[in-house]
Amino acid sequence: MGIAPECPGQDRRNIKVENITCSHCGYQVEMFSDEMNVRCPMCKEQVCRQRLPSCVDWCAHARECVGEQRWKQLKGG
Image 1: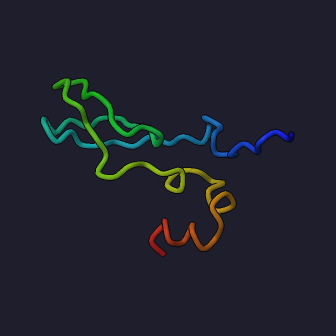
Image 2 (image 1 turned 180 degrees about the vertical axis):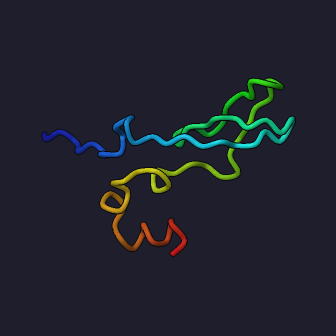
């Protein structure tokens, strides 16, 4: 049995950060590209993304992992 190939995007150095506006208080919450929700440090409410994050959004290797056609579909092109 061989070892299953690892996704090159699993390297934590490829994670990106973005600011998401808290829908409860308007504070700009820092959220990493691999997170689906975080607690707002101001009002303590949960802040969620509008859609679930996908490695296609942030991973430099996504095109090679999912294939060109699927990558274009997921990126909206």
